[in-house]
Image (cartoon, rainbow, N blue to C red; front, side, top):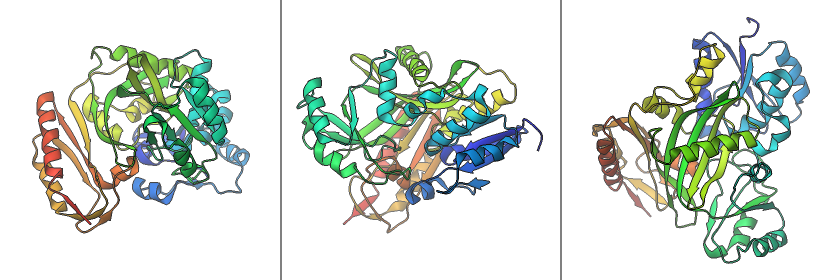
Length: 415
């Protein structure tokens, strides 16, 4: 292996599965490592997890892995998905310190409670938050914060994909939501030993995807989320629209996201930041110190001509990269939603979406007669499927979005 050409990808799942092939095309030698604990089977199956070069187990030590990888003289170490962030951080600090995030803030890049605390410490406006395993502490925090009777959000601190995110209208039922999460294994294979309780903030939710290089947080794309509330009190994705960089007000969101990356100690690599623009200004929902998941790099490339994958590989190859992006096409991802549980009928109706003029991609993950559960989080959304619409005319895209929903209504869910 040529010295300095190895690039380590930790947990090459989800969008991270695209990194090894992109690196090989650019002349690099990717080395894939699977961290421990492994993702839950539900997550692993949904992500089509490839076989890694090295798989850690419970008895393996990071020090031994560092010694083994040091012999490869890696150029860079990046996480492929959320579960790989802690190990990638630890390896980079030891092996590629010049391309590593701030070690002292490692917990803030993975734990949602520590994440808010890091932004607070940096003097940034945040969502009022408590993270604890003690209901008494939550009660005291609610009273101290003036949030008694307010709408709340309860969620695990170290999971992903909106798993376990529960809306608590009027604060009624926060204890039950908290107890339902504590002690459970989440999709990342970790036990929820604490729970995050936050005030619920409302507004327009954006995602800002970035690649940080040369002390610059370069922006690859900005999107606007559409989410709907489920009967059980959760939030699921309805759509995601790629936006032009000159959209009025977007500079406020992007500027806030860049400051959040500074506060979280992100100095190298991709990040995926979700920001709610409220009446009081932007507030961070969370940042993932990794590529956007759920196939978004492919949609980003369709919208802007490149994604975080291409930008990261270009920079590693010594090519200059821009600080921002331009929108070449209007791109909209529309996610299928099951509003109840039951048996699927007339699944063939989904195929009609392919005939829509703007349809560029259609993923159908279910078959006639499948028994499904109601959509509750991102993983169950992806378990159904989605469509990607694209055209230079935004109105044509939005018209086909309505057509997708009309077609979806022809798919029945029977008891």
